[in-house]
Length: 212
Image (tube, rainbow, N blue to C red; front, side, top):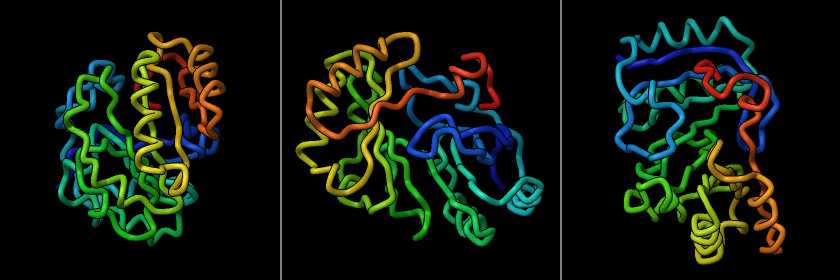
């Protein structure tokens, strides 16, 4: 039995897949408490739902791309099995997860989007650094930065762990706190092929809308 916040269809707002239609399974519950979290409504609660019920609702949408997000998906023990079923739909399956749980729990074929926690989040000490050795081609690493200190922290992680040799690396500004133009400048100054990520759904719809 899962705890589910919502299952819905929208556009991908983040990652290298931004702009593409996607079905989202937003699970409820998270064991971190990032200062800038923009999905606090999914940190607790949720509706009890069986695997079969989730698959039934997902099957009502096109089977092109499916993302499991949260909350924190790996707080729920059955998430890897849910991924196996979703892969059976023939869809591209993404899981957005904090860097706190072992990403190798997820089955082969899942694209892991790993959110490395910067100091500004207040959860820097929660990072599982072994995850960066578990990354595979196709995975993605994201740094959400509140300021230049966070950016430099992320830059150091990218260099030390040679992340650009492994997967796509994205830097995103904390919405409403870090100026995207400043982040763009820092990226250019780094002379590294880092990708600037803006939350597309917040630019299109309200920043407070919960179904994106």
